[in-house]
Image (cartoon, rainbow, N blue to C red; front, side, top):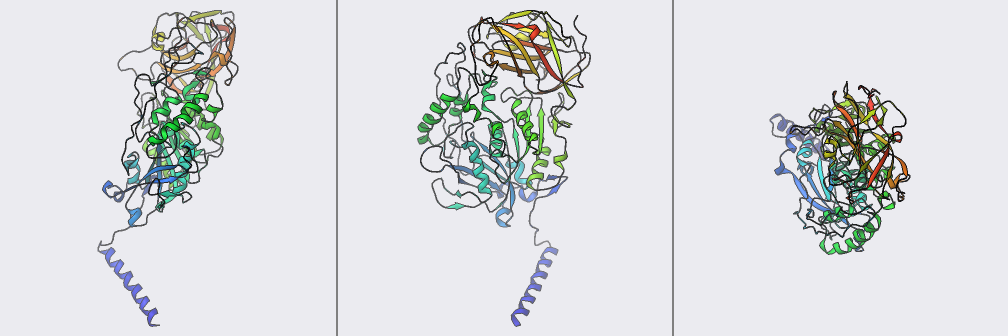
Length: 613
């Protein structure tokens, strides 16, 4: 009885003490995320970097990719508000993983493949650079933290396998690069083990995590969120890949053709392997032998460029069935490094699977995240479980040609649902300016170009005449033309040799070389193909010189408004100086005009220009 009364009195005393302290401002409320207008707001209590808790650890995976007989451990860092310790606050996680954090190899002469050789012949041996590893513990990276920690998130980074202080071997799209981030997500949900040291046995728990994870990053760092999502990892609720490489075949090949990514002539998957291999120096020789000098050497096939099992295993479109994370894609229509098809193919598949999806496209080059408000709404909806209606927002956001990247125009979907394919036909005169018309006629004949890699595509498009390209143009447009979707070309051609490059550009003319020219002023879209793969992407066959072959392939997705007064041009040539191999000049490509046509997806289903006679 006495004890019970005492407890009651002590309880009342504690209540009045707390009430008195709060009334006099002596007891602060606990910090918590603030959500307004469907977005996580910056919270003052989370915004002082000097109070953030920063530490690192190693998460144990389910694989041994460096062959040392032990499960690989991934190096992970954590940045979190101090309230996750002092007040027991649990928060969701923004996670970025990368092979770049610990440094990369130099791009000295000889590191890339020499592209100057005949098609079908092996290239000269190249140099293999070594990476000097950088970085200090416990901080792997500072990316994302200033954006998301003040808004009530924890930020986590990890070095991908075989890079930095992570165990394993880089595989450039192999299974371990999907399973590594999955292991980190599993650790954040209490399903995998974390340790204070690379070889230690003292465990670390993610007691401050709600278990809800969102991933983002750009380029390779944007590929890894997709890779993780294809594992179906529980807790990975949303991803925002920015300019991600979604298929290493599409990155290093095009319709059977050996084709470099823009800006990196002669790069291939083994070059990228060397570029990122910053892991344990004592493991590098073994990794090189097993991965680069065996698997990649036997699989990448720079001779035929055919699609095979090696490339299929590095195509995330083939692995999407388990994926359940909400997807916001971001890409530039003029990204000629990781080309815009990479995001579109994944967005399209995710939409077909019924996943929450949005896509943001801008008109610039490589990189470029969505506006912070768009990212914020996405993460707030799926990581804080706030019903902000983001899943009912327009599916597509396109930055128009003269607009700021933070001011995209909303559309119900991409491609624009009002777009219809319009077929344009060729009229003779391509060595100067042939016609491009919506009227089909017969017996237009054949025209021949001569390959010369020394002449750039820009020079060919800007030339009044050239034997090195065929150019077919519409009359000046009488109204603006809005292209939205994936242009396609059907072509009938013959080669004077058993192998030839085929390059196709769609351009806006007159070509502008003014200092204030925008990236959208000249090139609309482009594509490349190997005529040897005219009937199959998986099997190339030597061409019979002089024999005509038909092939059809897609060009890069686009959403662009071509202004009134411009002309749309289809340019066909052989070797593209910036992208393809460089065989000796002289191969002739002959195009059958009756068997060649360009399909453009036009909003409104019509294109207005005065037809050629």
